[in-house]
Length: 235
Image (tube, rainbow, N blue to C red):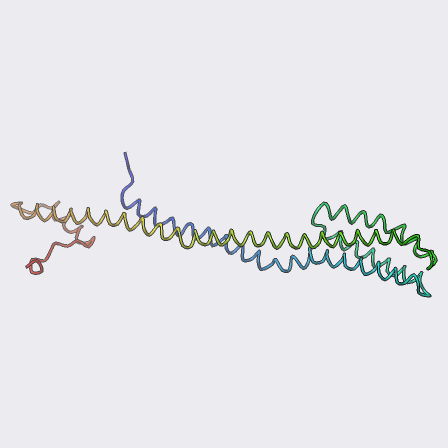
């Protein structure tokens, strides 16, 4: 047995749209906040890691150049401090296991190489392969950092597509669906109330006296927008 009245159904359908709109509003506001802070997060994390890798690469090239200079030992030492500083910055902005492992490999390979560079003769080419290998690993780290930036951008694009879908469903589809359902329910209600008015009029017309119940129904229908037809308009 269906215990839901037409009024209950109308109220339920009417409540669906604002309820979903409230949920959608919370989701959309959260998404706007996330998109608003995304550039700063990229700058503070992925871009910072990429700058650190670029700093390591620059330090290695300066070391290679400094070996041929009169104060080679001091140049190498200064660039070593800068290189170590960039490694620490990179460690603070690790975004994946691959980045962490590569950073540790770079740090472990750099220590003995830098010690050898400070004391090696400028004409000693035995350290060149190790230096090139370290530069290659730093280049690989830069590629990983680039990939991390691209991954964040792709994730943001995916989230934006989901947000668009949510907005279309919540702000367009659901209100229109509720409107159609309410229109159909109210259309049925209109037909039933109109039929009730016709039957009340027939009862009143054929009854010898008008009862209190008939009067109450007549008044209720009038309040609902179904007054007794005006005979003057009928003519």
